[in-house]
Every structure is written in structure tokens, then in C-alpha cells.
Length: 266
Length: 342
Image (cartoon, rainbow over all chains, first blue to last red; front, side, top):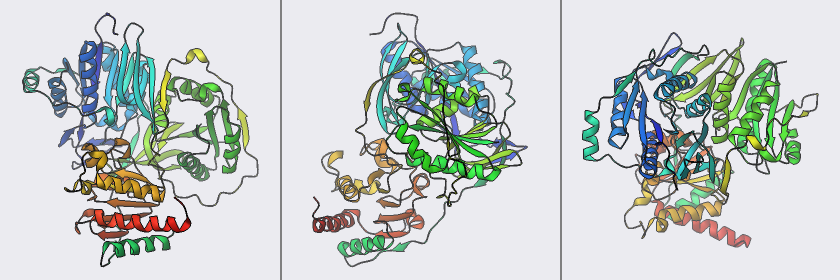
């Protein structure tokens, strides 16, 4: 199905997210994240899986891109071990992710320097900054098509530059065809991501990760930054639990249903 | 006059609860600063829906009624909406729903309008011309307060974050209905929907009753031959059909493949706030709690009396779900028989 053209080029975006046990502070209206304990963003595994599946089927190269300081190399090495060909890290604080417009601008600049790819794969959310719109912003900045929550790659026609994917949109499953280049965010429903092989891990550990600085990508912060005023812990409200008792399951069920009827929920 | 705007995509026959929530949120914000509420409505054959929207005391509805808006395509929705927004002045903020369509459009429009965007916002306030809002970060463990000065600000509204509206006063003027020009044509459309499967499970984020299953169902002896045969899930589906509810699930049983991801309740799944939430065999991890804590009544059924879920529930049953659920089902079945229904 795929015609011969130059090789497909994909970028997969990975990022280490901050573990919720870390500390989060605000200085002068800006976020300062301790970044001490970081974990690989669970959603990114699905993005890597999609990129690798695409490579296996249609050949081409995958560049793993990340942003952050030392800790982001962890996700990049994992991406390399799973089959990505290159790894690039934009060396700056990833506190920018709290303001997704700025983060999207940084990614756009870096991607322009790398050379525009046919596909950009990403996970569907970052749970630490609670953001999933950044990739729609990136797609708009690059003037790419955009499909979020992809559950399956169906076919790819690089001659006509079209791609079909299935996705779930507000509960409805649909198959949609659109043109590339494209930004895709991959949903959990995509399927179980693979584990790195021993050889993959070994190769990845030796790989020299390419570093970009903000100067190198010629990034100037846009003037529309958000101001962060306060951060407070969120305590879930505990309630008083009334235990329903009875001598046997039938009696308990009866008592429970009785109460629910009294409270008018049944 | 300042305007608070919201975007409404009319797809189904009746207005979805999310849409109603968007309207209420816009009205609450507009009330703070004496602004008017404008709704941008896209869809096909809108007549009936506009009539229904009329009951919500909006000040202005700007609608685009065209067959191209029958199905959602990002490229044409965005092009149409940006032109509709640019025709307006003094927009303070634009509210979108926090679903796939809302987020895709909001993200793209924030770039077109070169403005700030905040996803999953709640408690939006405008004080002295500065818009502030709150949002959850760090897996819902922290609340961040954010200020933005740029106008118009774009928000996607956190679901179930608006309290029921206080009595709305009908404004003196009738709702102004304005038909917008159509700024897009067939040639702007480059994506095609090849297939759409609408025979899906009911959307769990809107259901009034959710019966959620957790690790308790993987009890040995009740596993069944395969996942479809799982006794616990069968009970949940039976009970949910009797109560007109839907089945939810904790992350662990979704990951183990017992049930589809669409059923997952929690931070990485769906955020729900039904009238009744029955948690069966769910211990209550913070991620799961974050997805259902706003439910009106929470019932926990668990064999472990120390399960954290009990601290967040209104009613608790210390017992085995394989005994309690069948007993409940029996009672409801008996009731239906009396009513003479199947």
C-alpha cells in the first residue's frame, strides 16, 4: 500500500512528569517545580508504541524529542531502547509546561530546527501539569492536521499524503481520514505498549543524546505569559460513613435499598 | 457592553448536561461583571435546538446552520468559529467544554487569537479586569490559582464544577438570535469520516447512576472462563440495567483487560459525578477518588473494613460483593415483577 518516496520522518514527544509527591512552589508569579522525583509519563508509552508500529510497517526514522533538564533523559533512553533512532533534549526548565502556549512555541521552534516531520506522535495528557491541549496548539503553530485520542493507525498513503486512524470522540468511535503532515495524540486504548529488549536497552545506554538550548532554537518567550498566584494542597473531603448492617446479605441489601429510597435516589 | 461567550456544538437532539453546565458557568461569570452572555452555536438543522436554547436566558445566540457542521471536523469548525469570534468586540472570555471537541478547538483558537488558554478551569472570577481561575495539577493533589490579563481568555471548563444554578432571572430583552455568515465551504474540508459507530455504551460521565467495579471482582473462584464470563462484571451489568445506570471500573481491572477503557473512572479515565455511585470491591486510591468524589451519594461495598474508600463514602457495607449484589438484584427484579415489566 505504501509507495516509495523519501523515508517517513516521525517525531515522538516524551517527557518525564513530576511525581505528585514532589514539591511545587511559586516565585514571582512563576512556577518552580522541585523536579526531584520524576517518573516517565505513562501516556508517552502509547505514543512510542504508535511511532514504532508505524516505523515497522512503513519504514522511516523516529526522533524522540523531550524537554527538561537531566531527568528527561530517562524517558529519551527508554524511547531509544524501544526503537527510536535519535534523541534530542531541549535543555530548559520544563516548568514552561504550566503555560502550554509557551511550551508549544518552544516545541515548534525545536521542530523547525530538526526539520519538519511527516508525523508527530504524543501521549494524550500530562498528569502533573494537567494538560492535553498543548499538541492542538503545536499543530496550529506548525499548520499541521491534528487528531487527538487516536486508538488505532489504520492505513497510511504517503503518495497522496493521507492517513486513516480510528479514534474515540466524546464516546463515539469513528474512523477518520485526513492529510499529513499531522500531529497525533495516542490514547490508552491503543493497546499494550511493548517492553524494551535487552539489546535495545544496551544500545540506548551508550547513545549520546543531542542537546538543544533555547538560544540554539532561537526561542523568544511570547508576551502573553500566565501569572501563577497560589498553590495549595487539595484535600479530598472526607465524609461520615454510615455502615449498613444486617444478619445476612439479603437483609443488608434490603436495608441499603430502603435508605436509598428514603434519600430519593432510586 | 462586555461579553462572556461560550461555544455550543448541537449534535444530539437534546442539550447535553455539559452544554447546560457551560451556559450556567457563563451566566455566573457574566453576573459578576454585569456582562452579557453570547453563545456561538454550530450545527445542522438547528431550528429545534435554538428553540430549546431559548429557555436558558442567554442574551445572544450567534449561530451557523449548515450541512457542513453536521459532523465535527476540526478544520472547518475552527475556520468558522474564528471568523465568528473576530466579528465580536469586548469579549472577556470564551468557555469551551472539557471534552475532545472543546479541547481541540480551544487549543487551536488560542493560537489564532494569540491569547491565554487554561484547560480544566473552575471557579473563574473576574476582579478589577483580571481574570483568575483555579485548576488541578499534580494528579489532582494541588490547586493552582492562575491570573491572566490578556483578553479574551479561553477556558475549558472542568466538568461537574458548577453548582446548580440559583434562580435565573429572565432578562427584560428576549434572546437575540443572529445568523452568522458561513465562512467555510466544501473545499476547506480535508478530513473525511469513513465510519462512525454510534452504537456505543452510554457515556459514563453523564449517567445518573454508576456502578463501579474494582479489584474485588478478580476474586478466585468467581473469575469465570474468560473476561466476559466474569461473575462480578455480570452482576454489575445486571444491576446497572435494572437501575438504568452504567458500569464503571477502576484502573486495575481495565489494565488487566476485564473491561474496556471507556468504563474507567478516575484521573486517567472519566471524571463522573452521578447522583448515586456504588463502588464494589474498590479500595479507593487517590486517583480513583479524584474521579468520583463529587458524586451526590457514594456507597462502598468492600470486604476490607479498613479500605480507604469508606472514609469518602456516605454509606458502607462491609461484605462480599458476590453476596450483596445478587441480593440487591433479587429485590429489584421482584419489584419489576410487581410492576409487570419484563
